[in-house]
Length: 407
Ligand SMILES: [Zn+2]
Image (cartoon, rainbow, N blue to C red; front, side, top):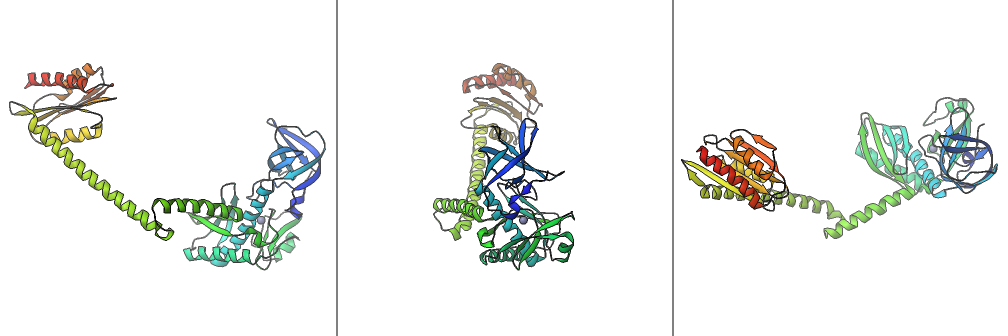
């Protein structure tokens, strides 16, 4: 039940009549098989065509390998009549024709530029890529291949379709020889430039591809993935990038050639500013530590420091750093707290100072209504629920009283 492929002869045809020869139902979906079709099924790296059959949308088109039948998967709305009229989504079809013909041109350009063979092609709604067997492709090869491909487009060379037997094809300088099958091969020839076997849809002359732009390169082992765009997609890509670049030049009040320098300068300035902030922050912490030590209570040669900060002035990280600074010197016990949405207590002491921090932290946390906390004799901490400064100060005061008893 092979479907006659009208797109083989004329890829520009968008309306056709046909007979439904079979209907297939699978997992709640319906497909119709026609005696002939313009709808290209997903195959050879090219996605299917969209459109309508008797005004019912075509959601997917697949090729049934076993007999070559083309299945048109249709949306809601049954197609009752056996005679149908179908319309193709031309914008999508022409996009595929531009990208696919562009691929033939670029693949040949890479052979001429770097003897790099195309091993696979993939076309989706977002991207077009070819994978090159390319261990020795250099940046100048890429540039030359892109240049050559665009020359071929602007020379507006005719694109011919012809049929050849497998034996005939073996005598021809084909870029890609498909696995040998029965019957005729469909050859696509870009006049005096490229000859390959292909079942896809192409433009009649290379000028219709408009232009080719390589947009990304990705290496994976011996393969080089080349992402590119042709025609309408190249224009769309240019529009988008132009818009981004224009916004950036306005934001940075600079011209396009100076854009990279401007961003580099900004990055350096940001880095420098971060360093300055860090330096000043360190100095402030040191000052805070020195002040707290100077103001601390003294008992039996031990300096006892108590201090609670609102979370608008500090955070757990800063509090830990401050605690570390305070006990770097001898004979210090620091009982610090953080008030706010999540309260926090950090108790620590110099290694030569007295006091059991892990014993002090528990009763203090209890006052805050928390049981989660602990540590060692030198350093203990624990978090509590939301608490204001007064509440956390009460918790710290309880620990201080216990500590005074220990000294
Ligand atoms: Zn093709």
